[in-house]
Length: 155
Ligand code: CA2
Image 1 (spheres, rainbow, N blue to C red):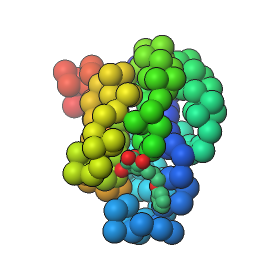
Image 2 (cartoon, rainbow, N blue to C red; image 1 turned 180 degrees about the vertical axis):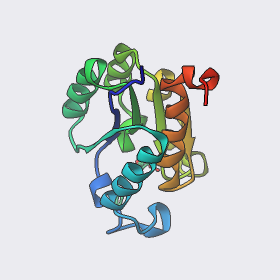
Image 3 (cartoon, protein in one colour; image 1 turned 30 degrees about the vertical axis):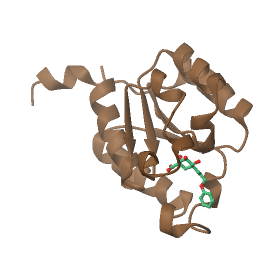
């Protein structure tokens, strides 16, 4: 029986500004463009997604806590909270779900304060530096993580 719970795709503070500023770092796609690409790609992978953005750490925590029951995995770009938030790490750890951390930019080519991610300790894997395509790669990884039985399935 396939897992029908959606993948929660979470976006942290200021990602609602994508496409309006700093295109040299983050590209020209808006978050709406990325959401549309994720939805289309998820369909091809047989996944459903629940795509959200918040500028509020507590709201992200509430959504992660809810995901424990309502989602089969979490893709997260925690934005600036990546580098500051033990709280998000604790929430992601408690969710006990597969987690893929995504960043549009290659955080290791940028300022040193971006080189450390608190949330990576709760992530199954991390994808950074591929722009919006990173979200699609994360969904591909998630498809394997939530449907491991597919490997041996009859075609
Ligand atoms: O590369 C990423 O995806 C980041 O998570 C983006 C964060 C940054 O703090 C992380 O180090 C890396 C910043 C998100 C804010 O995005 C903006 C987009 C347009 C204009 C201003 C901010």
